[in-house]
Image (tube, rainbow over all chains, first blue to last red; front, top):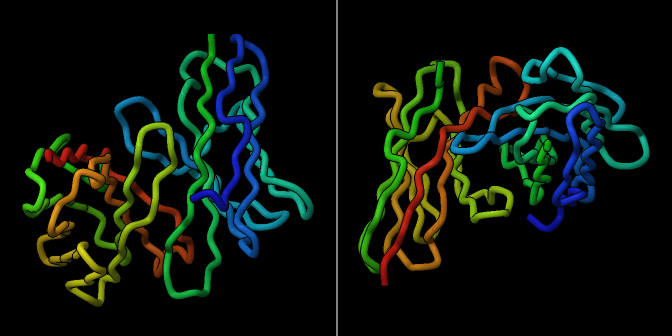
Length: 115
Length: 115
């Protein structure tokens, strides 16, 4: 768990501001997934990225949300013009496919609060 | 449309006894199933997984059973320990259909193991 680093752990934004969430995958992992957990809910898939490529963004809202995983540096989930409904825990997971399993290792999450 | 369902929000067992957590799914394309454990304010931690070609997988105190015809899986923890108290998430992946290990999660079951 400690291998996937997310920051910040807690983020407070006013309505209309931008939120930037960062995720550094485990060493050697080139696949990153972002999930969102609303209160009393399970985790919901948002986007799947490989280095410099978005593979599947079917779970991401069409507006205000974007994600990237550049060649160098962490993956970024960006939420523009945040609204109260964006308040949630955002988890990043990384994996090294080809090892015969789907065991993704999760970070500790970023808890976004929109006030 | 919940594709992965954990119908018991909570479960309480005595230390040393067996804990059985259940999970049902509706998507017949799912071919890989995982259980994650989550403590408050932390990310999910991978516990155990099972491929759809198997009906049982065991790892120490944890055993996962898969009944494909019933679209049902369960996690058995024997013997249960107080440190097992956490939220347990069932998750599924349809890798063969999509070449994508994105996970669909249930809402979780809060397990409390009483000393």
